[in-house]
Length: 286
Ligand SMILES: Nc1ncnc2c1ncn2[C@@H]1O[C@H](COP(=O)(O)OP(=O)(O)OP(=O)(O)O)[C@@H](O)[C@H]1O
Ligand SMILES: [Mg+2]
Image: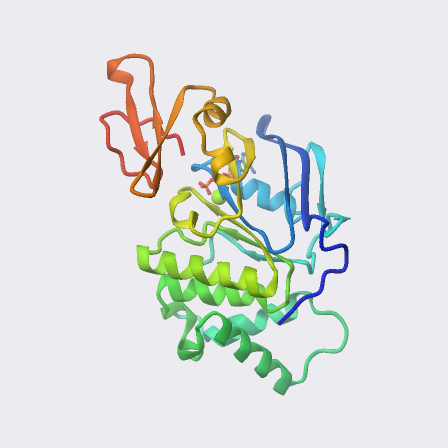
């Protein structure tokens, strides 16, 4: 499945330029700016409440920004933009719902497609091809509510991909997955991004599982962002400026550890980026 760009291959598929969002009298996002090129794999990294879902809602045209602009595929925002595929953060799949994995994937065909609907044979072929692409064929006829977290995640990714988006947004798809499932989903997304030249923007609170595949990242803290390659962004100076306090960055056994050195001995705190505290008092820096 190859999707040809309808604007220059050197043009960003997503441009976020100076976006600020105020909610209930509070600035939740401040002057956010970054670009994503076609086929690029980008992490949106930040702790709980940092503003990741709000930023996705802005890109999806579901949340108005107070300032700034967003272009998707070189064009201003529209709701139900066929260029964008979306896997939301919270999807509750009830085990009692009589819906098979393949039905959920097929529903993705109906969301954006205009004009003559596909015949049932073409539909079935498209769904089977998508189930194969995410390695979900063997549980295609199982009730989706009974599938494991990792299996459901693959079905939701297939649902978002079947309409052939050029930008795939995934909001915390690794939450609740064990390390093995996490690695599988990351590898699957990286392969799809590369083979189909789909740009991926994936939010996570921990950068570590994404390190092997990230082209760039956008780090969000307190509504402010820094973007660039991992080496450019996950640096003490950059993160200290973002958090407004001193931050050290350690690299241990190939993992990144963000360390907050606070004021006094009792205030010295450590936190690993996966949330495992290694010191006494925790200041959340993720
Ligand atoms: N409709 C709203 N009205 C007021 N405040 C809101 C609204 N929606 C979100 N917020 C606040 O905006 C901030 C950012 O929320 P958001 O959901 O974007 O964070 P997040 O990075 O996705 O967090 P998480 O990792 O927990 O999903 C939070 O402090 C949240 O309470
Ligand atoms: Mg969120």
